[in-house]
Length: 381
Image (cartoon, rainbow, N blue to C red; front, side):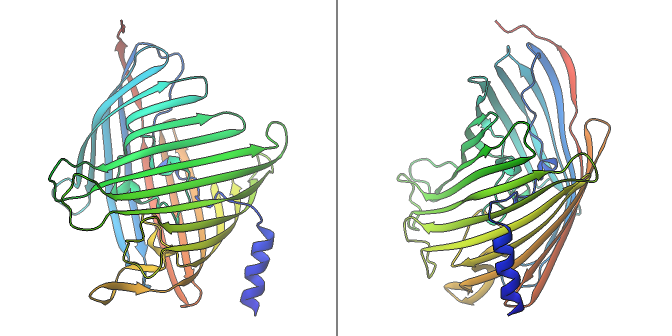
């Protein structure tokens, strides 16, 4: 009874949608398009040194530790005021491994189509920059897939932020015995009461669709397309520049749909609700969220929020399945800048599976270094 009172109290208290996708842009840096850099050539370094320890003991995913570094040296050139070209190499190295985990060539073209409208082709402004909820897009995708490649449109003004992209994950040719893979997404937020008001109300919307198939492939498994949608309303109150700086109250509704009904799961659709309360303080934020889901699956989301286990097998053809999930999630972050391009951060996370009385937790450290070194002026004709 007390649990139900708490849950419904939180639902009523958080009629909005959230920053439940805690701002983690310090974990991955995409250089913003700079003004007044016409014809400038830079040598850029993007370096993220990380430790992430996941102490997970439940039925839905196993714990593991990630420790190492990612580094991406590149050349970055502004060919005029509206076009930037960036080329380099992205390298990931886990501690305790002799060889590099990933060595990926990177190339991107970023062009300004208007004052508030950008097109990026090649390496995208991805991962945490999509501002997606953890249940539908796990921030740790930056380790498993550190580079998104494809195309992306971004629109950003005072009221509307809009990001839509296609990440092409696996290319095929005629006769391949592997499937075509890609992820398409839309993330948007419309803001009310902007400007001088201390209050801000916004309506976010998110869509992630994954596809596995391809007409020219000889891959034997059936084509599969899965989609997740999330939306709601978010309330944010700016407090000031003191220790406590803002308070946000929010709730997301989220949905899962198997568009081809060939996933092999015992269900083809599901839904969830995710109320969240968040306090932003001088050095980071504190977040508390309650995840209540029924038959929910998100291929790109954190496995802790799913209705199907990613490792526990029931029999030869199926994984452990629990239709209803209730999860109390908390996050505490701390971040501090050293000089202009060096940032240190800490994250503490807890996940309490209410029906199973299972407590899991995780913590992480990041030291990020992202300088630009001016080389020379190169005229582009």
